[in-house]
Image (cartoon, rainbow, N blue to C red; front, side, top):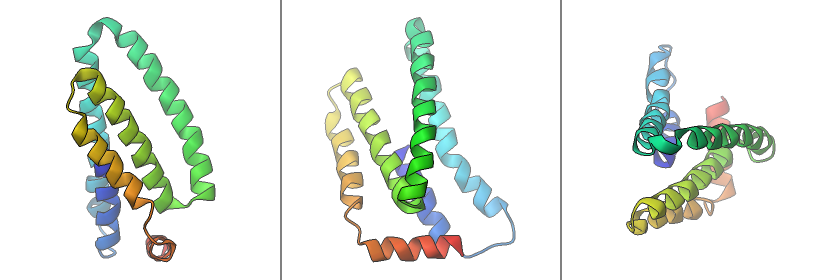
Length: 133
């Protein structure tokens, strides 16, 4: 899911401006479809504690909504998406460690997003100006 955020943002940056809104709506649905699939799989796998999982999901959504408001104000769009991807990657690491010992992939994903924070500021500024135009 964190990779889909970055992928869709990059796709929007690469795509030329189009009058047809479906060009933007269909790729923007990808993270939501992946998230829905992941949540439904978690709820079916751990159906005995689904009420606690749903409560945790609501708490995380509420805190995430507040974080997004502040991060958009202080960081801008691109850095906010990178921050959200890093936080999502941390959640993936905890979940993968809980289910199995295949944590190397999760650490690689987190490392990729941590490395993306070292992208030069002028490149991010150019991307934000291009997306805002």
